[in-house]
Length: 75
Image (cartoon, rainbow, N blue to C red; front, side, top):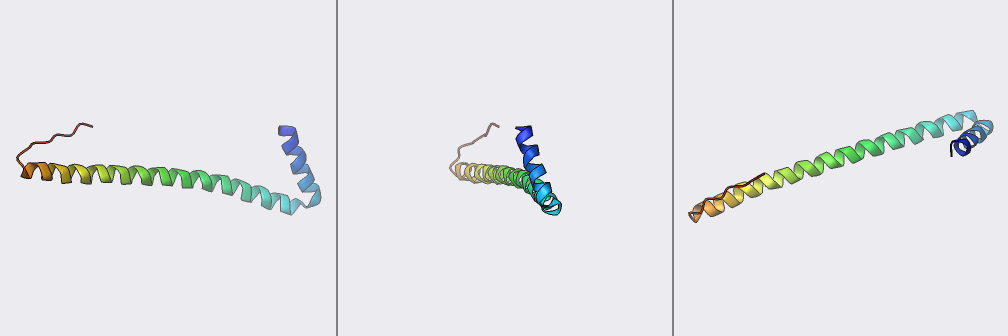
């Protein structure tokens, strides 16, 4: 696997050293941005989930309190 990848890099560098550097830079930038985007989406989903949980608790506790029923939520 490593030998195949290094042969590919040598071929790129023999063809044009600048294009190989640009390719590697874009490749690593793409991987890093994909991980950052994935982390950002995960955090946003968790925030939205907890926000809906808080809104739902508030709404349902007010709804049942009007009817004289006490509701407690467990985590």
